Image 1 (spheres, one colour):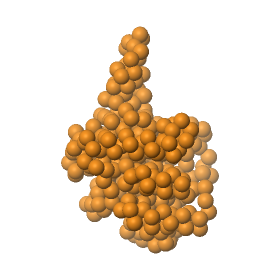
Image 2: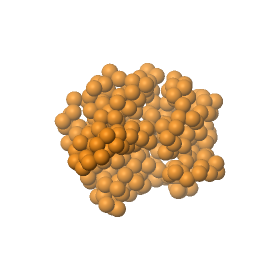
Image 3: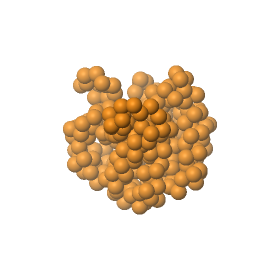
Image 4: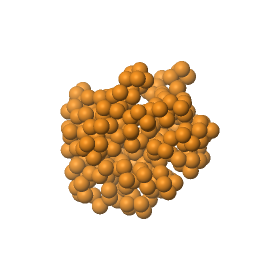
Length: 289
């Protein structure tokens, strides 16, 4: 298959009460694991890459990283029986416009460092370009913190205001809106709850499909409730990194003299495949391809 615009999947999930997984990858092995899990579950998946992963792949150059990942994802999709979308996660304006030109089928602009007015203006600009190219567009209102291992500063957590969400989607026409309900990026333990009352208020005002970032640190009970209330795309990154790393570590612990990357990376992939499959089933998208 070729890479697919995920808009129709998101709208179906939005209508039927399940969610599509947005799975982050940092390298080729993680990309392969996501695609293999999608095939085994007969499910549509969104493969994502973030700004820092682009810098990693591109040896410090995010545009080179975009080029590498676009080529890898196109080849993976061409050889897969599952429908695969390619999404830019937390991109800058430059990265989003470059991704559109490189064949990404979905992009997210992260306007966190901009004023609200700038976020609206840039999101609208990218949305117009994306729609001309039949590409899905996601943007964010509110702030999901990215502490990156440091202690969380509560001031960084800015929950989404329902009226701001309505104003944002009306002015930008984005296809998906990422909202802040209390989740935090990069958490390794599932211990956060979500502000479901706030979600209910947002859903009452906004018909646009909603996205949850930072799901790896949110309890399964909260995610399930939020999906029933209208979250249609759930981003998953740290859970995958954790599984992949534990698989590699296990392989190296079992064989101290193992130096063949193909062997220990394969165990990392196998561990990640199982986690992606479990999340696909949990989100209700298994068998929806």
